[in-house]
Length: 189
Image: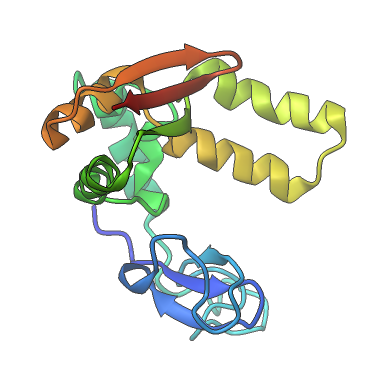
């Protein structure tokens, strides 16, 4: 399945860059604000029209919903670990940082940290994914926080995935689970 690529748009100045051109901190080189993901079919995306979409003027570059539905149903019955999560099956629409970049980051941390390093990550789990919106709504958090929280949970890792990344980097670090649905990956030298 080939889904049109995304780009990043600065939330401050509106500057657009390709995802591959982002700095490691995902901040704009012009104004320093964070980027948001923009797909070709997103409202306001470059090349999209401000006019509403109609049957006579459909959205350009939108993925085929039937094809995505079929792909996601196939993944539901897959035995691959990446497909086991009900959330992660939908990864085609999420901007993903490549595993090689994470392994490179781990190697950099190992080489440059004097006493050690710590990574705090969310734990990808169905209770966290489906429970967070309920908690966020009860707490009265903004709609963007509720939506971004689910995306962050969907992009997080499980223990076995963190262990595989650490093994690829050749690093022996501890992975600890913390409440609520967090992993702490720590390496003390």
